[in-house]
Amino acid sequence: MRQTFDIKGGPQDGRAHLPLLRRELAAQGLDGLYVPHDDEYQNEYLPDANERLAWATGFTGSFGAAFVFTDKAVLFADGRYTLQAADQTDPALVDVEGIPDPGAFGWLAKQELKGKRVGYDPRLMSPNDVAALGAAAAKAGCELVAVAENPIDLAWKGRPPQPMEKVVPHAVKHAGAAHTDKLDAIGAQLKRDGAEAAVLTSPASLAWAFNIRGGDVSCTPLPLGRAILYTDGSAELFIDEAKTDGALRRHLGNTVTLRPLSQLEDGLASLSGKTVSLDPDVASAWFFDRLGAAGAKILRQRDPVALPRACKNAAEIKGTAAAHVRDGVALTRFLHWLDTEAQSGEVTEIDTVMKLEAFREDLGNLNDLSFPSISGAGPNGALPHYRVSTASNRKLARGSLFLIDSGGQYLDGTTDVTRTVPIGPPSEDMIRHYTLVLKGHIALAAVRFPAGTTGTHLDILARHALWQAGLDYQHGTGHGVGVYLGVHEGPHRIAKVWNAVPMTPGMIVSNEPGFYKAGEYGIRIENLQYVTPAENIPGGEIPMLGFECLTFAPLARGLIDVKLLSKDERKYVNEYHKRVWKLLSRKLDGEAKDWLKAACARI
Image 1 (spheres, helix red, strand yellow):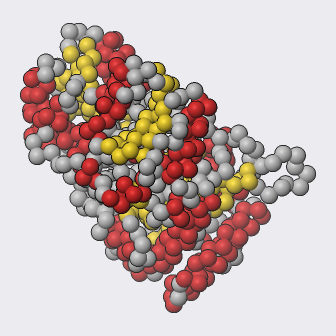
Image 2 (tube, rainbow, N blue to C red):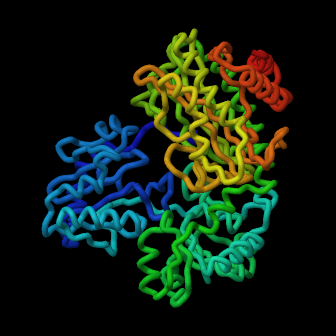
Image 3 (cartoon, rainbow, N blue to C red):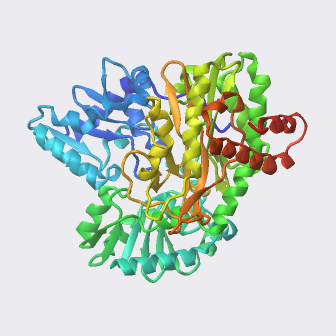
């Protein structure tokens, strides 16, 4: 199994580790320490060695922060983790506060800490976050201190080693372009921007720019390292030597100098006097400090790889489409199983995760999951980011809804798909809510829009039917997705919050509106789609863009109230199911194929 269900951490970690941390704080002359969840690489999934927040407090959620002082500790976690934070911390040692209200910095600003020294690790924070922390510290009257060595790292006895998985070349047939061509194009853009070099701090940018992949992070094939790119297309790639071999050196060729990660600070110092591009949203304050000390002129701008990486080329789209068809076969077999054997009321959430993973494994080319599966039965499905554990595991009870959000990592593509299905006969409310979510999903799938349109402009389409019924959902509607890279990828997204990046041909984005009835059930329908020029609209005067669907697996026909759908919406469902049948039926046989035919019948 690639997914585990025993969540580590808990109150015992805080009881054992907070005294060790406080001893180290005293040794460094500190009265407190800010502990973010983020690691040095801004990873979504952290290597065990970088789970500092979990080590200090026992809280293992994927988003949070803490202040640890000599006399108390305060953990900040958002609404997704309210119950988990309470379960995993000792209330006698750790107070739990919310995000965004008050949030870590808001809380600090209201404290009386005159004369206190509060440490932070500049390797783990963006310069903007450091500035915000500094402003809060000033209001509290305390001194903010950048630590040279993280007190947690020094106090952590038996800390796991940093991952040292081999870095491997990623074939051009999957990447669609040689890394030398990519580096030349990035170098030319840097020159146009007035930069002489760029420092890449994002492992995803390294993976894409150099056509390499790694195994340092679960669910994402990332190599942890850094790079310096130059305007002539040459580059220095800083990777731990234990991860490299002759095949990697031959792949990189003469234009890329492979250097040990231990030489990174020397590499930054060599940029003295140069204009260097650096992204304040993904690079930590440490990079700004080091370049500033070296006398470099810092050009604050978006990572030059981010937009080219987001706009997939023809080979990346073709590979992703092929991966989705294979993945759709596994998902259809799973949905058939759900609709037959799993209707007993005795199947558990963990059973479903294991079954779906087995169907994906049967494909023979699954390299990893793209994220830990969200398997929510009944009220657990009402938690959008729920992760099943042995402690929370529920049965799929008859008369309930079941939500499964999952994906796979394949050499040619990354998948992410959500389906909601009934277990036993659904209620009228379940059907109505599902159909309203479906209407929003169709609106976002079928829209045509002019160049310059952002995801923020489009977000309302997915919510319109729900809003008219007095309903909504409290998460974004769509996130970017990489190609055998991160399942969550910027810089574009579809959400209420402002995003200035226009939807551009080649961008892959999810379409996942939902509805969550607290304590009862959750509904989400998610497909991946990519931006493409749209067919000419009769009578139209400007070129338009649209979305092409990548994900193919049947919808839950038993949850669709046809009376609530317009003629065009019914046509969309029928045309979508027609494509599902055409693409998947030839790869299925027996009962699963018969089931798919019925699932794709016209409504």
